[in-house]
Length: 449
Image (cartoon, rainbow, N blue to C red; front, top):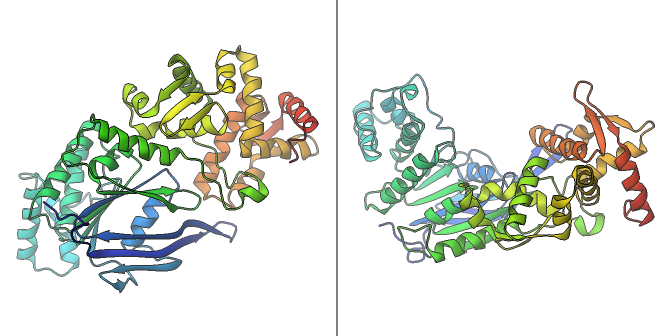
């Protein structure tokens, strides 16, 4: 079995105060990673766990030397990287196979790039194919293989290089549940064998249970920009039982860390804004479903247990939970969710009253919705085009994320009748509900604060 890093703390990769920024469309910079430091040791599996936008994949590519840091250093065996890391190999979510090459040819690609002679290439590739259980498919093409078999080819292509560190970017997320579970178990079996041709594994995941099943250490990343929020050692013996109380306790601990509210650096001075407090990717219908379920559980529920009952991964609930927490519909304490008075009122109200309650919460607590309402109120005729808000959002988000934020805000605002939206013209028009809410909030001194 692979040696535990505590017993043999040999550093293979060191990430030393790394930050990474990318240019935005308007010429400014967008910070993706901020002051990240970590070490990958001989004999351990490390999971990088975080929500979307926490920079997990960027960090992994920085470790691989595919992306250079803006500040800080990445070192392999003590040597500073100035290009691709010679001691790592990667497995990707998308399989990344060459469709015109056979299984064997795909596995040989890295060896060919290293100049390994043809006969040696063939011998090592066949051994790797045998190791990952694809005997008999050497001459098959990727289109002939299932998703699980294609990912096995990805594993073989990485392992044939005998890397010091195997880097995996959500390698199981494109697979069905049973195939993913099978491959996770096979990875642990391979890792436990004395001849496993790599000394450490680093896996990016947003799946909490996957991290606990596989890792010796879990590094939890926070967002905006990505940073290491916590490090949690996983001391459970292998094989690990998802149903054991100790396993569930670790899942609950990680869930609690992921759902903790984070305050952006300037939030105490300027208050929460659309760039520091993004909207979670949740529809009003999805929120209503979550609140209904929590209500039916007497107003409180254990989120991992709820995910298990719904046959979802526990992290699949995170966007809904984040949105409900932002709007004040739920209070979160670790892995426990509690229905608030506002959440109860919203669930029990008739249709029109529920819209009014939601509208008030959205204006008060959802920064982008509030910004749109205030901007429409300050326009000459109560209308603005979506391009105005899209351009503002692109100062802090990439184009795709800016579009997603605007879509969510439009969905929430239209439900609450705060504003209407014409998809053909891209025009947002202030609604009567917004005017009445704003008037009430000004009376309380809230809207302009």
